[in-house]
Image 1: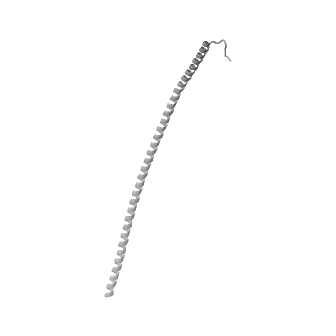
Image 2: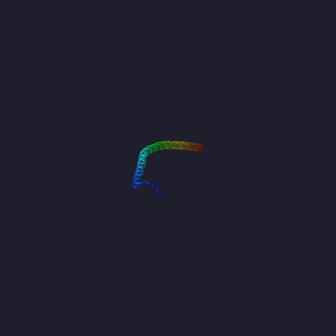
Image 3: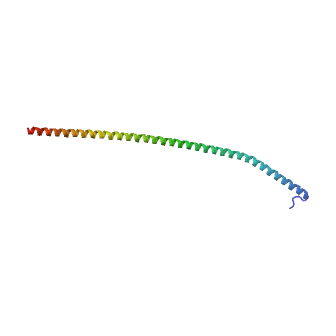
Amino acid sequence: MPRNLDEKFSDRLDTAAKARAAMLEKAKARAEAARATAEERAKERQAIAAAREERQKARADEKARIAAEAEAARLAAEEQKRREEEELRLAAEAKKREEAEALVRLLAEQKAARDARYAARKERQKKGKR
């Protein structure tokens, strides 16, 4: 079924050209809108990327701070342990010295007692000969 029987070929060409021009205009408008939103999206992506980098930097700084604190705590613990070991060593040396002195005193007392017994025995022997 023909659209309009009285429509001429040149009219149909003009109508088609107008339709193509309208479609082109519509496409250009869509492209312009897409370009404007693309710029906005690009700005948003840049802002998001900058925020992400800032968060990553903050996390890295926090990690470094925690690592430094852990290292400082480890060094302090090592220093404390070294001091305690030194105190234990000094206490052990002092105890060993005291034990040695006590042993020397005991041996001296034993020798004195032995000498006293020996002297008493000799004294008895002298009295017995007389």
